[in-house]
Amino acid sequence: MINPLNAAAAYATTAAKTTGPGMAARDGLSFGDVLEQAAKESIGTMKKSEDMSALAAVGKADLNDVVQAVTNAEVTLQTVTAVRDKVLNAYQEILRMPM
Image 1 (cartoon, rainbow, N blue to C red):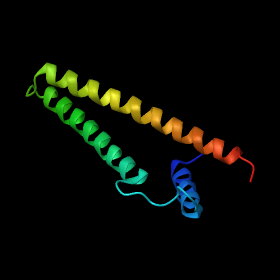
Image 2: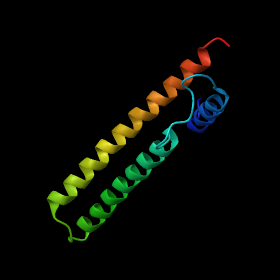
Image 3: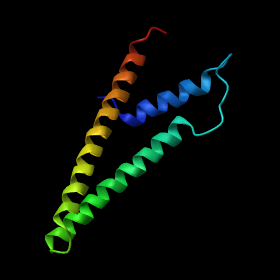
Image 4: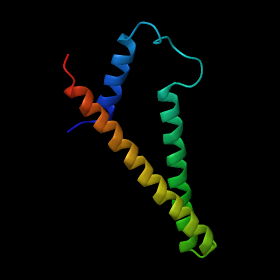
């Protein structure tokens, strides 16, 4: 089975080997930085949902806030899963390319 860490390592290795016109480093955030930021935001959304659910269990949270936090967490999880699937599919396509 394909491991996301292996996919990221393969991407980094390929990116390090590419040279030529249009391949120079660009200013701004790298793909890895954007991915890291998105992962941190996703984790934060999930933690907020857990906290709101815990507060609701003891009666200290408004039901609307809890539903909104859980819905946000659900959408975030669906997005993360979709991105993971796309990355793995792209990695599999790269592996199928002739050398």
